Length: 425
Image (cartoon, rainbow, N blue to C red; front, side, top):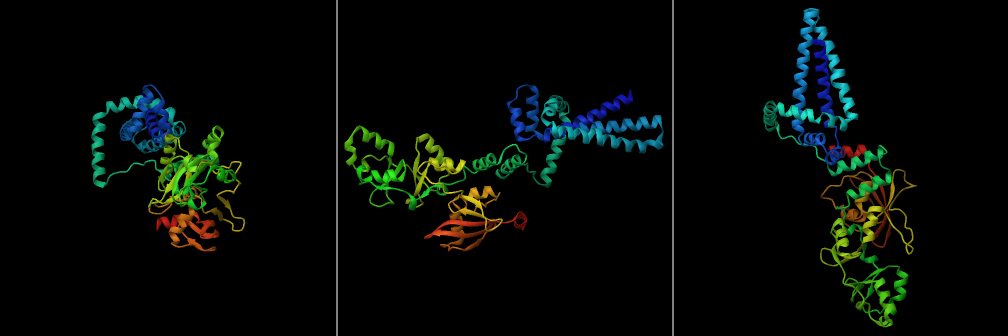
């Protein structure tokens, strides 16, 4: 009878140990699975996920009571059967048995089958927590008092960096491939990227004067290959409308008289946005207002550039090319001349570069724009070809320039141990 009771107590010790590990090893995804499940077991398990203090207190009280009872029972059995001299040996054997069968083995099993075990033990643990409520309440108050004395305890929260590490770990584990991981990394930073990082700068925008007729503009429009063309009045800085090619062609078919009308009579009202607007806000504006192009303005209200729905899509899925565009190459490629370095297009959004090398920009740095914008903010002047800039992320060397604009730079990232040394300092 006593032996059976000892085996039962050992089984209860394994029950509590495995239950603790099963719940503490549940991920956020597992908890979402519990939220979508129906039934009392899932409801009880989700309750413990939302009240981890109650879970730990219940499990520890139950486990300690069981282990103390088992120790007392084994000591009593040893004295009755073998005598006092063997109590020490019995205690050592019991400790070994508890470690193997009451702690290590149950915890290892629970780590690999955490969700099924959590569902299986949820209702018994919930009943025990209600039964032991006075004791649990007392221990909770004592624990709270200790926390107030030694400082508040912070619970781990899922951060943006943590989520990025999760996607990297998923790629390492083979759950997602490299492209899917890259897509998720881009999605994480989707709301952080500003319009100025993805827009076509005003110096490269194809636009036409509003006084030009369709007949005069026809050849230039065909050669441009654009379907939406900004129209300006007087100066290229003064955008007054956007010409939609499909609307123009539709009117041309219906009435030949439109050939000699000025473009201003056919243009639509432009949609203006600040260049500091974040990409997700612009995306929802485009979606709700059925727009595909916007005119970006700088902080002084001046014409800064043009941004389209295609620019947003490219930020998520990579560069897209149609029949009118020539392939310009990747925004970043490994350098064949400098091992460990990369040739980066200066127009590449800095946050895309940060995602590629797992960098962690500071909030006070100008990293919302392009690589060129980031370097210009550091240099404070127009750089020269060959100029080298040292940053906490690595070394940037200007490779090519067109007049005063950077085209490509050579980026040599710092090694991990160097970055860790800086962060520790």
